[in-house]
Image (cartoon, rainbow over the protein chains, first blue to last red):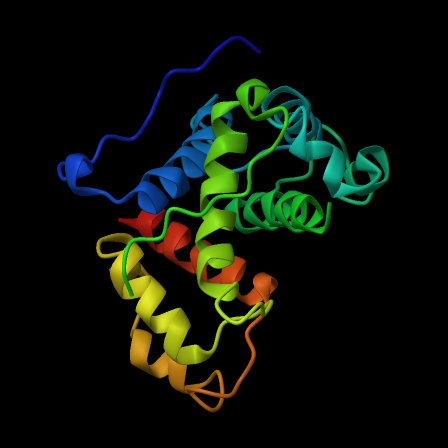
Length: 99
Length: 99
């Protein structure tokens, strides 16, 4: 997948703190993938693609990625919602902190 | 609490993607608060302070903050670990997406 520059703009984006901007950056990646086909989820294959492309370093902290993806159901059919995406980012963050 | 500029430096920080840098920014806020006293947790009071200061906009999406903080145990004694912090950030992110 190519570079996605879409990003939800907020009226008050200039007032956001650095942490808020960071959270919006993480949200926007889900949004970039999920809006293909106007859907509100990622398939396991899309989740894997996103992690490999966007988390080339921190993604290694998630643990064995293939195993996790396999547990998420049919690679092209299962619907992973935002909460599951956020949890996966959290796994990367936790793994990163332990290093 | 004043401005905290501490941030874990990574050798390969220049290679990090925008999402990875965003995740590290979110991690660093927990780290800034938690390192006071070399601890690896926040108290509910510290969590509240962090949310009010660092998420003045997105924090409103979390829902009734006082209620959530009250459920976390003794305001000055309970130990909230990184996973609980990440979940709280996720609540803000989810609330933000719904708006």
